[in-house]
Length: 208
Image (cartoon, rainbow, N blue to C red; front, side, top):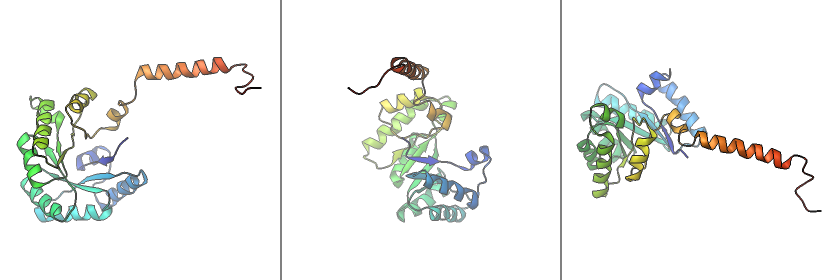
């Protein structure tokens, strides 16, 4: 059901995880055990050189599945260009505007991650802007895919999906809501009850 896993230093801090090589290696091994197709790990560093070195170190942990996340900043874009030219996969993250999505497409990024909830927090139509990003990428026949982050409700997910947006990051709590529904639970309970009642005292289900 899920293709990959994504994280960043902020999410690691909230989860009580260390943002260093040893801590991330633990996550990499766990992702591999889950047969994860993509593991998006965010590089960090105060300079372009440090950011690039961190990205290379992340890739070395599991080249087959790691996608390097880089912020939508001048250093982030320069490092993204270097990694993309080397054939690596890159997600440009913290995207807040349609022009930024266009810049990501021009660079040839694998993914661009708009922060839906935070765009809406700015008083803008977050879903509307993300939908427009998707239309622009399709009109340009770009290979860059939207990876919608900061998603807070399934209502937003369904609205975006109806407009052709097909890739999202979900918190575990929100992901579980994809299939959990009280009516489904009630129906399953009824099935079990009826199964017990109709088989009670049954002499068998095969013909004599």
